[in-house]
Length: 328
Image (cartoon, rainbow, N blue to C red; front, side, top):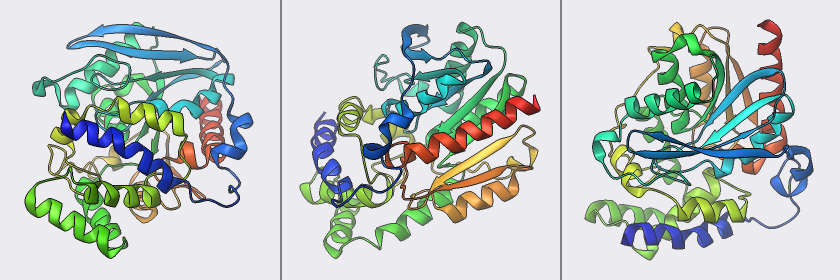
């Protein structure tokens, strides 16, 4: 509980770090909100093993339905709301994976697995009556999307893999390099926390704020950031990821899907922020391994491209899905 409260308190710090002042850049949430407005939708809940998942369905266009898979694990879908603008073309489904957001709490570690979340996604797809869907995963959600495709290729038309985390050893190596770009005080706080296995100090929280403000988000939507931090399931995040984006000790630590990428047979769009902790060079390697895939670097954005530059993010996804619909 103490760790969770510390993270909730950190939200204010992270918002301040993301607000870099000055004139908003083109493509930031503040200047482009009108271009990402979505039609009204309808929410629901679905019983799955372990509880109920919350979902929101918007749009009724003729395009293939797209299901949005948020990052974490243990977080929520608040930051993916700008992608509901795709609802002018197709049905968009945004949901909170079990354990986080508006879905039921989850503490059973036997369910903190990739197969559990894959089965949960398949239950939602079936419940909504979709035979084939596009998947848009972000961060941990790209693992979920790819593993769903591996298990159920017959139900997947295409994938958007945004800021992908498909090679966790490479992710961690890059994140450790990014830590070295932080202030000396932040680096020292991280070193002390890791040596003592104590991640609750103010110094460590401030170091996280500095890292997040550079590489995770630069223009957060304050209300959605507050909601995100207030509904994080740190039990899931710690168990599968670890204490932070740059200290990975969980069950995903050795995850590496790069050997599977050449076997992907559906259209794939990779996106990554210009300043993304996912690293454009690493994502370019994923794209090179995936037959016929496309890559888009979102200018001015860190990891949460839907906050930092929603206009460009929505546009590249919309254009890709239009092409996929035309090809189908």
